[in-house]
Length: 395
Image 1 (cartoon, rainbow, N blue to C red):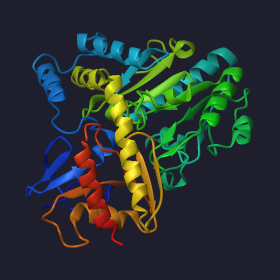
Image 2: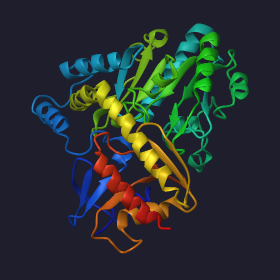
Image 3: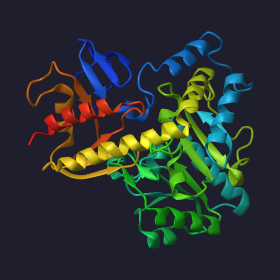
């Protein structure tokens, strides 16, 4: 079959036709345990009845309306989202994580410009960060491998090493810096958490210098770490939070939320998104929020993540160098090419067991495997997936 897609992904030769729960099925009917959630998107797995029902009911009512007006579904979603994210006051609905981070940067720059005048527009991010693939969000991303071939980049971004408080204090110049954009848990660089001391000191510095503290929760938010927002675990209040991926359980959706200080920065004409607040995405988002804001459900996410980490460490497998986790985000450093293990787990190429279930996992660079399984995964499915992983790792 001819391939009409641009050659932008290292795709495996798999084509999926349906999914149910934590399972995907290819064109040959073979089953795969999905430990990727579509890179953190399918937080409730596939064909979740609450999500399917919400989407179906909304499709029969209203798919889209111009942002000159509001839909009842968007109003309900916005209220639920703001109330779920402690300390937030207003929200802008968009379509993706990159858009959400662009919006956060615009808030920081306008806030600073209106209060302090020109020249105070720099945004500080961390080395190892990932904030999107537009030119501006690539500019904010602290990984050189994503920068190749796409310059010149948007001016006004600098990177510091996570955990280095002296470097952060020096970088947060109150004469030039508008915002600090952080991932409490960096996903794309292999599930790397910031320490409580670092986050709390960052928040203190931002408050003292009137620099907006902004958390990119696109991958680590919406319950992924066992709390609704990962930054909640550090006891700090954000000025701006960005969300996407799991926000609508598989329908494209993004959002950036502002706390008291930044709630009214953007005014009519400052920002827009044609599909932002789309009623279909909002209906899906309501279904997701109704489930992932439940404290017992969040507790199960944390428990399952701890179970996976403990099992991997108990193996003492010679190829595993380190296991890092926060809720159902796991990074596993290995002594071989992660892509090779990823392919072996999916295709059954180690022992030729291609008729048995496959396992879908992610990588982060050459030496790290990454797991982002759906929140609904069962203990039995965790055990089954880890057995497939062990087979792929070999001895």
